[in-house]
Amino acid sequence: RIQAPMQVFMHSIFHVSAWARIGQADKAIKILQGYETNLQFPMNILVDMGYIATYNTINDYQNAEKHYLRFKENAVSMGSGMLLDIVAVDVAKIARLKGEYDLAIETINNSAQFGDDIGGVIEVVMSYIGKGEPKTSLKTLQDFCDKNKKWEHGSKGPVLHTFAIIHH
Image 1 (tube, rainbow, N blue to C red):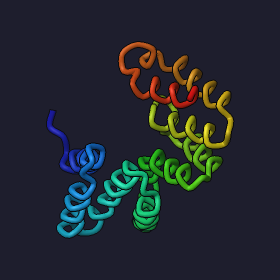
Image 2 (cartoon, rainbow, N blue to C red):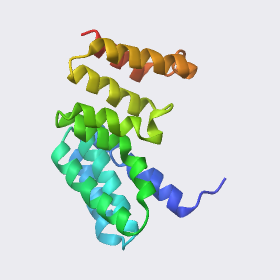
Image 3 (spheres, rainbow, N blue to C red):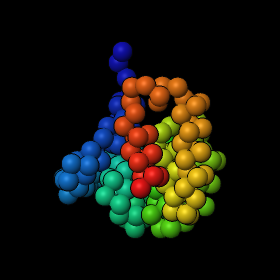
């Protein structure tokens, strides 16, 4: 199946943050700066999604928030507020890293990302841990696994990692 260029670009913009996951955040940022320099509005606002993901990967919430605010302003100004839901997990992580645990939980609970997205659930669970509510975090994770049987067998990595953090 051939994908439209926009779909391919949106998919690849998040993968730039993979460089940050392997300790090469500088390389990811240089790639994003290249995109930013060469793209025109409205496509250039999507580059902020890559910055948000990259900075969140290295837990730099100040820069992640700066790019989120710019992304939000541009998305709303062009009537594409629905794009904000795409970065809901990242917004929740920014809030959690700032110690705004209730905001992080609210962001995910009000987002379409909460359903079967492990990233959203992990942000909620980590926020409950930050609030000092490990029992609530464990119940949230267990409820997620009960509703999403695919996490019981197979791709358990994120769930088991989060479970280990709860019990640490």
